[in-house]
Length: 66
Image 1: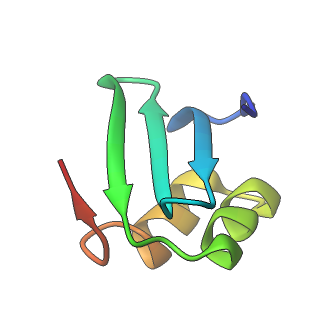
Image 2 (image 1 turned 30 degrees about the vertical axis):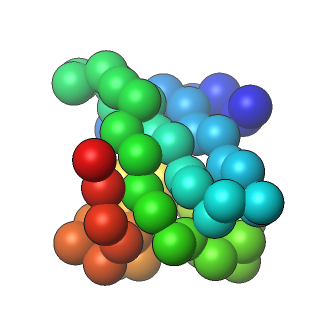
């Protein structure tokens, strides 16, 4: 599970079998689960220059969480 050098997201974990992305935020902790996330979205988060901006643009409000 990758840890990020980000002011917004501390780490993320992805299970390709269930398409569940778990994110731990720096401020609010976690994990927060996001369901139905394609592999390429997770890969994009890992490779993004700004994890917070990528999350806001590609994940937030686009995948169910619980």
